[in-house]
Length: 204
Image (cartoon, rainbow, N blue to C red; front, side, top):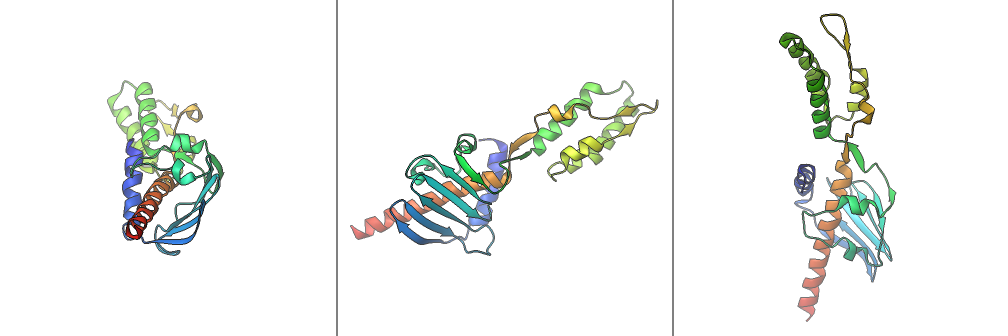
């Protein structure tokens, strides 16, 4: 599991530690299951109908379509998600599934600086200080591309250092909203199926 997915999972667990499950509707493949309560931090609900699953709540809204019982499609162990494959099954989304990765952004900026650095140690130090303050310290705030476009630093000889062709850089990764929604789906289905199994065991 990537570092981003590990961090998204830990963050997700912090939201749902005290969540209670409420089954609002259950009729075969027609389900409406809520976790937490509207207004509480990190609440969400899962709604299924034949061929579809929709998640709404604090982790944004996403609707997937694949097989008749979508609870079976997402049935995985806690902590494991497959965002790339699942993204292919999206039919509706309330927000973007990708965003600039702070890790990729930092790596690309540092690599570009390193490839183009000057022979002067003092010049390099001043330039990298400006890069750190104006770019690297902004990583993860959502304005990385704008910061790259606006960055200007004048060297001692009067030449201007800017980042060229940065729009060709691969800076994106999965958005935190999408990853947490994926974790919520798997976690919620596991809770639901455990409750159904327990109910069946008691009835037997």
